[in-house]
Structure formats: C-alpha cells, structure tokens
Length: 117
Length: 115
Image (tube, rainbow over all chains, first blue to last red; front, side, top):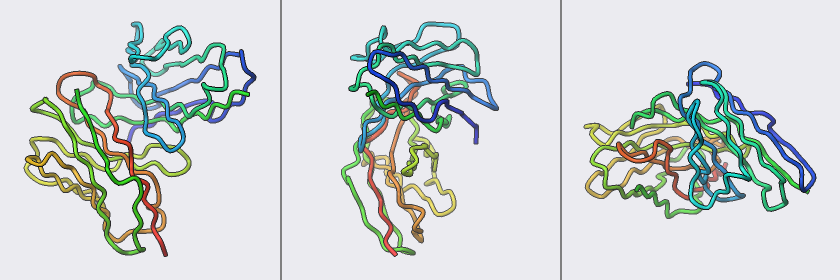
C-alpha cells in the first residue's frame, strides 16, 4: 500500500510553546490530507481536511487559530499546535488520499504522540 | 452524514479460533464503502479490508473476511485462525458517495487473543 510518513513520532514540550507536525506522502500525490486526533482508548476524531493549495476545512469545535494546517504541496501537510497546553496532549495522526473515490483506501501516517507539560 | 456503531468494547478469543467483530452503520448515501483497520499498541492504522455497497460478494483478504449484510446495515469482520499478533484495536469505518471524503470511524473493539 501507499506510504505516509509523519514526523516527529513523539514530542514533549512546555506549555505555551508551539509544535509542528509534518505529514508526507512518500510514493503518491495526496490531493487531500486529513488530520485526526485520538485520546487514549477512544476513536479517531477528524480535526480538519486540507487540500493542496487551499485553506483547510475544520470540523466543528476545532479551533483553527490553535491548530494551523498548511498543505503546501501534493506531498506535504503540516499541523502546528500553537501555544500548546496540557489538554492538547494527545495522539495526532494524519492520513492522505489521491482522489477521494468511495472505494479509495485512506492511508495513515504512524502518528505523533504529543505531551505538553 | 454517516454513523458507525461498534457495540463490543472488548473481545477475547483463543488462539487459532475464529472471531467476529461487529459493525453496524447508517447512511443516506446509496453508494458507500466500508473499511476495517487494525491499530496495534504502536498506534499505526493498518488497512485490512474493503467492501463496496454494490459489491455482490463479501470481501476476503487472507484470514480476514467481511460479512456484509446490506439490509441489516452490518459489516462484521471475521478473523479466522486467530494469532497472538492479532491482539489490537479494530476500527470499522465508512465513506459515502457524497459528503466529506474523510472516513468516519466507529468507537473500536479491543481484541485480545489468548494462548
């Protein structure tokens, strides 16, 4: 299957700092990338959808000024958690597709564990 | 809008036995796709199997098969000959023909395979 990388895999930061997470599609062009958040023992919750060259679409309840998403190219999307606080500690996982047909498999990155102290 | 329901928070199965993980869904889309993913403790999401709403036959991929009952809106995952490495969280997900392109996930089932 297609390969999606995510960096860093784990990050610990102090409260008030910003953290950037990168998501790359390594062997295909991702017209659309998704960012999910997962709390322990819970399901994946979609945060936002980003399309290359346009503004991200955020899900209801997700602060766009806190979670900045940039999809600068067909292979790279970044999520920046600005002024992180302990409640932002979570597992963040990105995903990518090429066209979004009903049958298209959505491939995921390995995820980033964020711990805000 | 789509909704996925997984009613089994946790399941146990003996090694080498088969296990069925339940998934029901709701959608107004006449065309949709159903997916199953495995998430081991490392956190990565591993795609297992796909079933299209218009597929005539149930999908199979190795030890994984999908028991698709369209009238009941269910898409249960069957794992045959369970292995210790099958212990993980399993998520059912779907995408409709219309609406958002991102998969909608169920709450997941934690499967534990016992020796």
